[in-house]
Length: 216
Image (cartoon, rainbow, N blue to C red):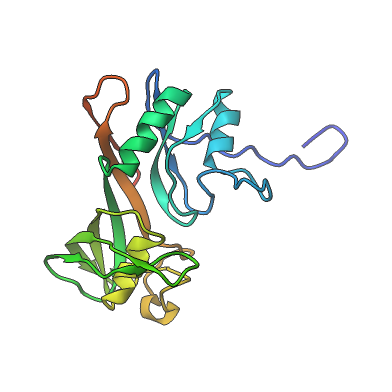
């Protein structure tokens, strides 16, 4: 509290950094904030802007995950590295692994190959999502998810198409199907666990993983 009696808002806790070198920086994005502020500039800042304030350093976005999704996000520290990383994502040389809780009991492993409609169009495009069931709890299944393409809401839409929408998904799920799942406030149970890619400078395989659990 200030001397005049006004209440001070507490500063947010620092964001968790997962990796940093001369070309790249990776952080764990909490759920509920975008990867970066949209180009129109409206609304609060995203992970990029918060990190730039925290580190006093310019960051270059190379990919994004949904605002409701938590997990690994990588930024470049210079334009050359950004171009190399964007090209790696575009050429499908980045291996992405997610953790998710889906509704119902799903067993074994599988591959979802349903084509998906492009965002805001009637055209469809190919899509593939591989998964492996890990465990069951509270009427839901924890799955390891490996998307091979990067379509709009791909993981969320694919699991909805096979009748197992993600727990806490406000767009494709039904709250009645996950009632009693959460101990606290509900959220979309989807997290980017790791990224594996060729490093833009050395070309060697770089693996970045978050150790923050996808907690209930």
